[in-house]
Length: 547
Image (cartoon, rainbow, N blue to C red; front, side, top):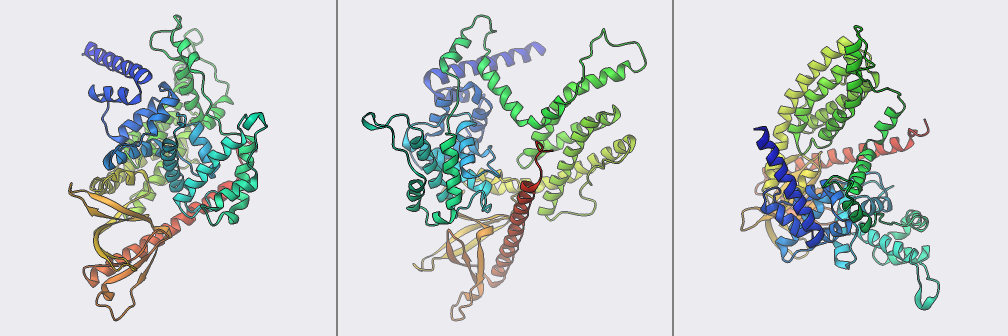
């Protein structure tokens, strides 16, 4: 059995090696098609994007950029490529960044080099605009724009500014003429009417680009190939890729590693272990001290991805229990504190999710672990909390499954699952009446906790989305035209993107929709306000470096 597992693992590695060879010689599409044919990869956009992110260190940034810029032939093909781009970019967080910081991070730290073809640049920047808008809409300090299209135009203008300010040669041997501040703002005035209201914001962007150009840094490919040919390295080892992978992992754990670096633990060897009664205890401390960051990282990932894989979080509850109990038993203060904070994060996620689902009871969620309890009291408390968390997450899993079921009936609906705080509220048919043209058409409306989606049923049986309207920008108003035959069962939806009248099948159905949308709008506005307050509070808090 062991030899069979080893052979299977070796075959997979050989298949991967062959795929990367195809990628480097014949292109990324050929390599991925080979992996799909060998059943090591499914063709779904999410799986393809995940593979690209996991193995981006092994793929040339230029090749990856060309692939992400592909557009497709027909409508279905274009949707497929858009989903690959979206799933690749949606794993990146732009929260708390202004648009220049977000674009700089996107173009320099995400594993690809932006291609030269204008259409491909357009597609990649379009996905960036969508993700940046989703992360920062409503934060007027970081994203003072009215819609996603404005984000796109400003991002494109920043790329043009970066090229213009840092071009090396002018025409006919003359020094290059560079764009001024006022010219940069003037160029935007044609596509964004509110440009003068954010003049200081744009000045900050101009100054940042002028002093620090956006440059994609990468090691020369010849150097990479030279290392591959180095006879002193084991077969299949790419030193450059490994170094890049290590640096990426270190970046995410920077604060944790800085804390660990302040300690001065020595490595234990068999020669240094005495025969005293405390030798096993001390050896266990040394082993645990060297391995606990790996457990901590696994649990962090499970919490971050809980909205997609709740079962993964449920499995990590036991790992967290054992890690925290071990740290408490060994009297390791730093480790115990780190895992206690993770327990708090689990509790907060669980309680917030239960509250969103309307399931919060006095006994449904665990209370945060106390830092003041003694070791043995803490161990008993940890075991009690883990049992309650297991039970509560089983209840919450039904809400996650409902979201998956609804998203599965909507074309490209998996995008709706990327927001961890989104929950499904209701769906039904409403007739949409255009106010100017007077046309009426029945659509399927889906109400979520943060957005309203309407779609029509396709010949394939799924629903194709016409529009997605964020609730925090929405206002609904009763239809008070008494002369109309449908006034009692209709209401107006006003939104910056769309405004129209909707007609329900009955007066009772209209009241239900009106009430649910109103409550959802109120909750979403309060949620946005809490996020804004938290951002302001965090910006005023002293940084770690200043403490």
